Every structure is written in C-alpha cells, then in structure tokens.
Image (cartoon, rainbow, N blue to C red; front, top):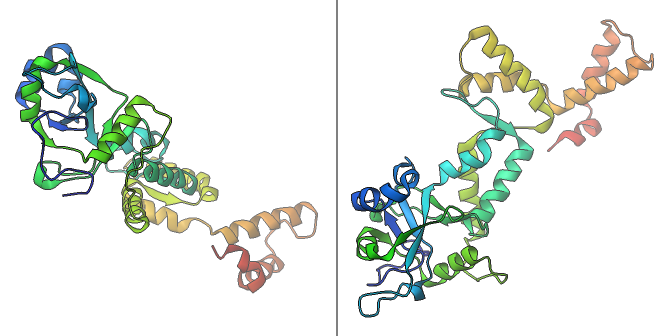
Length: 289
C-alpha cells in the first residue's frame, strides 16, 4: 500500500475517498444531472471533496446535504492536456518532440504535482490491487455535487481512502487556505526518478537552438514522403542537426565574411579554419555541456 493511502477504510465516507464509476453512479446518479462527467471516457474514478466532518453519519444521516465529487483521470491525460499543444510533430504514429526549455517546464510541473502543491490537481499513486492500474490525478477544479441520498452507494463504490494527512492536504487545496499542510514529500531520489520517467515518455527533447532547424527538416521529410515522422525517422533528422560548436563556427564565419576577413566563396582557408576550431581545446570547452 502506498503511503498516501490507508490500508483499510472507515465505515463513513471521508474526504479524499476514491470512488469507482459503478453502473449505479454512472446511470442513476451522474447520468441525469451530470451526463458529461458520467460519460467522459477518462472518468473511471471520482474523489470526494466534502469535508470528513460533514460526512459523519449520525442516526443514519450526515450534516452535508450534498457530496462534492471531482473526476480522477490518468496522469498521462493531464500531461497531454497541459503540454501536448506545446509539442511539435504531434499526431498518430508521429514522434512528438520539444525544446529543452519546455522539458524544464514539464519537470517543474511534475515536481510540484507529485508532491501535491498544485491547487488544480491532486496526484494519486497507482495501486493495482485496489483497481487503480496507473498513476492518476484528481482535477479539483472540476467539482460536481450529488445528493447525500446516494451516500451508501458511494461507500460501496469506494476503492481507496486517503491517509489522514493527505486528507488534510486535499482539504487545504480545495479550501484554498493560506497555510501549507505538512505532508511527507517524495524522497529526492524517487521524485527525480518519477519525473524523469514521465518526461521521457512525453516527447523527444532537443536543444532550443536546434528546434527551428529541426522543424524545417521534419516538415521537409513529411512533404517528401507524405508519411508521419515516427521515432526512428525523427532520430535520423536529429542526427543531421549541426552541433552547437558547428553552429557557432558558422555564425563566426558569417561575421568574418561580412567584415571581409574571409572570402565568400569556397576556399581552403575556410575549411582549414573550421577544422582548427573544431579541434581547438579552448574553443571546444564552451560547448562541453
């Protein structure tokens, strides 16, 4: 059991309870009043947002007149929603790619998300033995309400319950409080591993200075073949990109030519100078990272 969850469950419904989309919830509860949430292909689960104190049963009833729920969707869907529009070469059978700068933004987003410090989302670690087959995210900004007359069916649909500390963290995010609830964070090693894994699955990452050239090469490749540029073809195009050192040498040559310090046409002097710069240890030191 991951440390964000309780090994068992209480009799009462609590904030942070993860409910499976049962036939009853889909057809008898959400279908009539929230059809979009009932039918959405990624809404297999929901999380309870109502405070636990308002859900305690006393004499068979609870204080809250409604139970607030939010959809829980796969992490991959959330990442696609946030970052897919910013990637290049998207589409079926195509290998997406993006700049190193965008990769840094994705890493920052994931670091914040995994430790539940983003108010729009609440990260939920996969738990295969409780029917959660992959990492998920509750989208806390998409709240809906159902009547508490469906309380018993919600308890029946529950597959996991958050640990008390993480219930408090969820409550803080939902309530937009100004003080941070101190929950255990991922260890730096595990966090780095998880972030790196998600980043690697999202796209191929290319140096910012090479993006424009790669865009041109990819578009030319698609125009010539009429086929998507998949991972293999993209790696071929990346292999054709000039290195930072070669780009710098070309930029230097343009300046020298404009100042009439190098000839415009093909000349052995230019070839020898390019070779000398490529092999110069002092010059190469600026391109070692």
